[in-house]
Image 1 (spheres, helix red, strand yellow):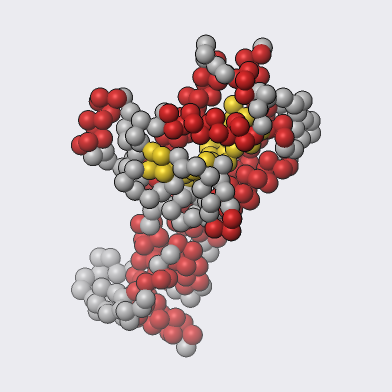
Image 2: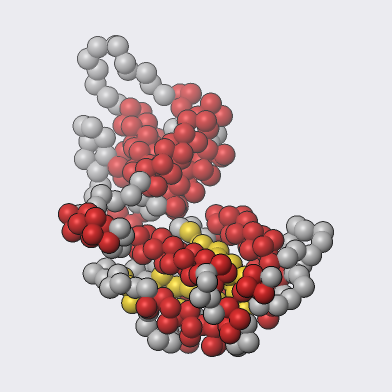
Length: 317
């Protein structure tokens, strides 16, 4: 009786080729819900019990046919949802699928999704023209903006660490507030009309990201958290990356990418997790980037975090 009820519910929820659905609300079509429903259904509508109709000629589908079609449709719907949440759900299914022979196939679905999500959005004609004229594209979405901001910080890093006109020696005598003002000014000077950087933006819960980049023509801000590395211990920086940037500033459903920028002026080293000895600034930056990759699955709404380290002491070497 329970099996029949499950099959009727599933067939009615999704609808089969010859069936009408119950017109259920679509709120359940979220990656986490589809994953949970797909795994639950497999306890009753098992693959090993599937009815194989291929090559059997004309047939009249029954309740079992509709149920297995709907079960497979749950997986298809999950693979069609873009973004990290769907990828993580597929990865979890590839580990928990009750039919072990299906796990490698689901893993392939997850890898294919990652490749598809990694594809860039096609450029508009004006973007092609702008790139041809200025050798740089104008961001058209949140992802484009985050990548451009990352490149801007890498350019600034190169100027400060190795540029002939570097002002690193002056910044080394400044407090974090002054360094933040300088970085904000430099980012505005390098905007070229492609983004804006509002002053001291206040978010909900009285949160104030150090810098927040806004795109032109779309609503997808990119938050940047700035730290003077020597003012913080290793565990404190790891906590700030996890709780402040990922947990607070990237809670906004318009923002799923951000930057964690470290500026180094002094200090002997930091203790970080999974290291027996203290690390230098380069090791600290690497450890923070590794930490983000390790905790990434805990933040399904955060697509990526860029960790940038600017070593001002290079000018004193």
